[in-house]
Amino acid sequence: MESPNKKSPSVWFNELRGLLTLIFQKVSKLVDRVLFDKKGSVIISLVLSIMICVVINYEDISLKLFNDTRTTVDLRNVTVEVLADTDQYDVAGVPSTVDVSLTGDATSIQVFRSKGSVQVVADLKKYSEGENIINLKVKNLPEKIEAVVDPATIDVTLSKKITKTFTIQPELLVGTNQKVSDFETPILDTMTVKITASQNQLNSIRIVKALIDCTGQIQDFEANAALAAYDAKGNRVNVTLSPETVHASVKLAKNTSLDKEDSE
Image (cartoon, rainbow, N blue to C red):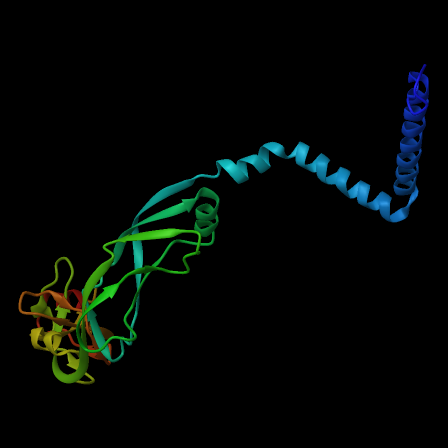
């Protein structure tokens, strides 16, 4: 005799079928509500769009996330920009170029270089007269990129500029078949020039010349002559001259071969 509480297999089956039918009905109503609801359809469309985009661009996305490794690019002869009050100070010790190594992801380095040539800066604005140790830095370097400058530091000397007056000596630059003796001593509209430079540079100056080009001249002429300062070895000294040029009047020497050619 069976227990009154014990259910037969057929009863269990019917109850399970009823439960599954109820669950299916609930899920069906939920799906219908989502599909036919305006907000729900928008959400589903957005999710599907994202999934399609990820599938199509999976290779590019994985490359960006996992394969964009760090790299190093070496640059040679990078120009050094000097930031200083060059009207007040003479600057010595800054190299014209240095070497730079950039380390970071390849994309960031490529974007940085595409914006223009890489430039190193020697900022001397906060330094005073005398010898100073300066750190060289890459200009406008992004945070994602590391830079190593070689040399990283330099010894720079800032010298106060002063002004001194020098006498000008005219010098005739003659061409083929010409001699300096073919011309009389030039007359300059001024015989002195003010030169601004460091004390050491001023001390090195031995002569200031007015360079007068006589090439091809066969008669009296006038010209603007450029001024240049030279040391004892004949090397040009890079200084500030005021004025930079003078006006010269040049006459042919009497009874010269040029004078005879002109008279003929």
